[in-house]
Length: 240
Image (cartoon, rainbow, N blue to C red; front, side, top):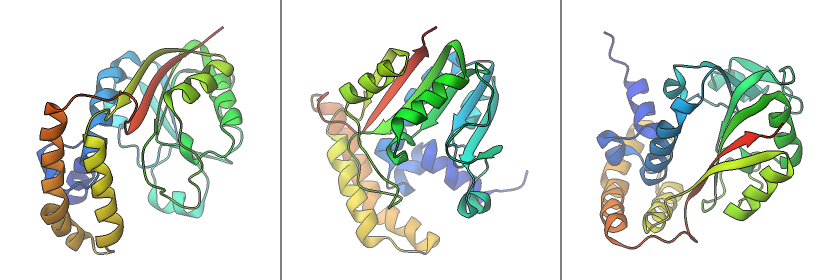
């Protein structure tokens, strides 16, 4: 079996274990996301479309489904992402009522018109089809200049219900003191990390790994706070 360092590092960034603790500045956030998505993914069967799929980091969790990744057609997307289908960013290239499930991970904050985005998701889902959506609540600006919004739990629920969805699960991820340690690591990443992947791994092991470890311990000991958290994760069902 060929040793694939790139694959191992990518896995450590999106499906973080011990290696992720050591080299992933975003470990505390990604750990929570992965654990929740892993628990929910078995309930998504049939045809599942990943809208804004990027590098499809959670695809292995949906191996039991017919999974397709969609992305907006841009030169950068063509060069660096793994989408199965490219589209114009307006209308999804899917028939009405054609999907059993839709997932979208950390995309909504980059959508300038969330009303049209959710309407398109609803259009392509079958009646009773499920939507799994994650979006940050506390996070620094990223992928500028296409970072447009942050959603509270109430705002996100209102948007979904307004567009014909019933929220069946809602999780506040990182609703403990890990949010403070994760933001500190984001600061270190923005200010001290550079362009060299190798040097960044060294910086992570020296600078952000200790913060990850302390953040885990403190989060386990301190009380939770549902008013301050890293991410929203929602499972919603399309109403007939």
